[in-house]
Amino acid sequence: MSDDGELVGPDLTVGVETSALPDGGMLLGHAHGEAVLLARRGDEVFAIGATCTHYSGPLAEGLLVGETVRCPWHHACFSLRTGEAERAPALNPVPCWRVEQRGGRWIVGAPVERSSASRPATTRSEAPSSIVIVGGGAAGNAAAETLRAEGYAGRLTMLSADDSAPYDRPNLSKNYLAGSAPDEWIPLRDADFYREHDIDLRLDARVTAIDTTRRRVELADGSHYGYERLLLATGADPVRLDVPGADLPHVHYLRSFTDCRRLIAGVANARRALVVGAGFIGMEVAASLRERGIEVHVVAPGAVPMERVLGPDVGAFLQQLHERHGVVFHLGDTLTSIHADRVALAHGGQLAADCIVVGIGVKPALALAEQAGLSIDRGIAVDQYLQSSTPGIFAAGDVARWPDPLSGERIRVEHWVVAERQGQTAARNMLGRQEPFTAVPFFWTEQHGVALAYVGYAANWDRIEIDGQRAAHDFTATYWRGERKLAVVTLGRDLESLRSELEFEGAAAVVSGAAPP
Image 1 (spheres, rainbow, N blue to C red):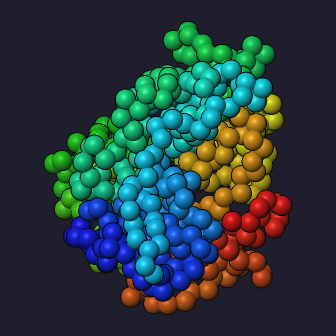
Image 2 (tube, one colour):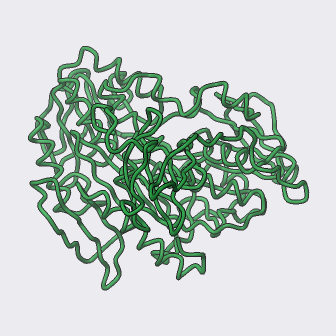
């Protein structure tokens, strides 16, 4: 499909010569009015929808791995045989069609009807009678969906302290804040989905304690829910700015859908916004507010934006990108006080600002885990199956710290795709699957229309090798410690990012003893 939505490639209902599709090859075409991806594995040819169900990425530009195809944009993975979304961030399947070989041609025929029934129900000997999920974010929602997809038929409750049903959190600092994404894009599912799948979703439900003896969670309103298995997906809370004036009404934090709507209302008549912090949230917010035509200044203590994660060279590239779009930086500095129309800086001077957005990091929400006596290690310490030190209690997402086979370290990662994939793995393990979590961390950031993809995990490194031209928006940055490759960042090289992910997965499989991808 072209950028304007026009169908491209051959009409696959007429077919293509068998020689046009070698083993391991993919071909973009169309059938029955839809974009179709034709892919060959050995003597079998598959036809599935060519558009990723996450953000409409072009699957034909992705990577075939076994009987799956991975999206080049955000690394979702789909089965060629069934069209099912096998890995986050995609939640919905793509359509499938039958393929026949006639007269030396591969011909796409009728669509394959998708069964509305879930997989066969898990037997009672394997499945817990009740599962409670605390948290309605990426990990919690992915776990709930996976449990039902795996055939779990027991009582399933999701307790979310948020006032909104699960939503697309990464979009809040990107398109939605910029004004280019409508409200209906943000919820992950509509209310009917949770009813139809018998997921008891409770909003504004604040869990205050876990009674591990009675195996129940207790809520602020005095109610309680029993569990046989419990998933803690409590996420993280923004680090608050501790200076005079930090509680003024024009000071904003961006973590929830409600936060974002308040911020949008707050900038409606703003002329100059000040962003405190030059990490992911700060930089994405700066780009989105510039899209709204607001003057933006950034104050941060580092030498360049995102230096701790991306290093000085990629950080400098991002700073220059923002400066070309009019963002003004005040680096190596911090705030000492906030006033109604200005802020004071540690290095002297003041900056006018009628809207302030603070993005100085987050900290894992550990109060429940600590109260319950779970082992804590700068997060909830979990094993390779994402189970905590207390049997029957699992953790996933921003709050979980797990043994990463690739780095050989315990790590905690605050990224959407990681949280979703952990939710999916935790769900299967709550059903007794004993599936190690070996997914390679992946995240993306989009700023001023430029999308960086990061694969791997590099808390520290001793060298960064850059191949390509940053000015041309075409490069790969590889992060090394000694002879060990830790992470890869790409711009304009989506296929290379997918191949790096596959390489890291193979290395992790060797260490963990899991099956290679």
